[in-house]
Figure 1 (tube, rainbow, N blue to C red):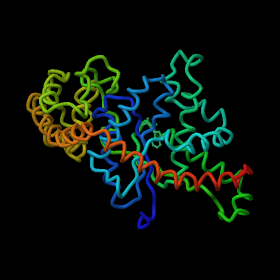
Figure 2: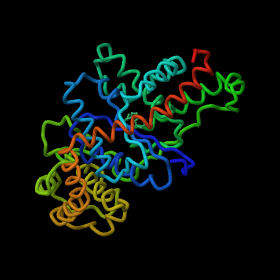
Figure 3: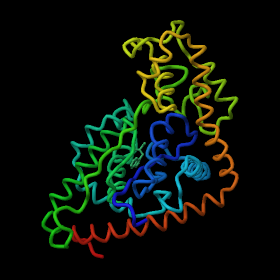
Figure 4: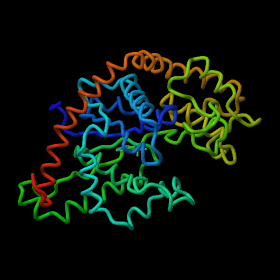
Length: 345
Ligand code: TRP
């Protein structure tokens, strides 16, 4: 692993029903980064329990599902690291130090917490409020330089940078005295994904595609069969107008915008280019092209995921191996942090 100069870290929650939104918003880019960076991809089960506790057997199944998705999309676990957050205790340990670095005011500004907690903010877990601090610990534990994430994680990335910066400043003297130079933590950068980082429901263009939507027709799951993918796209909500000629024509047409964005993301083009080709055509023709693109892209992933999930022992082996590699780096960081802040090693 030593041939890479810079490190990438990212994480996906094991919440079950991995869908196109999770894929286009995050996982799709992960494999591409492998040739240039040392990549560490985490399955963040400690984040998954911030909203509610899941049945333990189910949680482990969901963890394997994310691992299978990582491998099926081409991440090479021999060369890089795929591991589960809860297997490396240093995540929680560094999060505690960061709890005492981050300020209440910073966390009070987090819009995702406000969205998730809603009117229920007095009754959600402390973990849900503290979620971004744990995320900062995930990233900085590996002193990662780049973090591929969807648009919605931008604010959490800013918080991570603020925590790294404040730690470096508050402990500057001790950092220097312990031989770490001017700063201990690198300031990580978000790599925001391109088109369709926010994939919307196929039944309602105003709602995010979500694993908890009651209608399975609202989402394309990564484990959906070819027939299911085609049928869901055929039945996706649209309006009677033909596709607009440019993106201004999406005003008041969220379903049209969503399908075009998905197509652009799947075919690695821009929304404008898609409209150059399909502007003015009927949805029936466009949906046929979209279904072809989705099947071409997802069918191989889908087949590989099913194959992997049939062999949980293999997946568990990959995860065990990954945890061992992750622990080496995590332990090194925590040893330094303990020295810097005055805890005992
Ligand atoms: N918050 C991220 C999400 O829900 C998941 C996550 C946790 C993460 N820790 C991370 C992403 C560290 C990137 C880096 O999508």
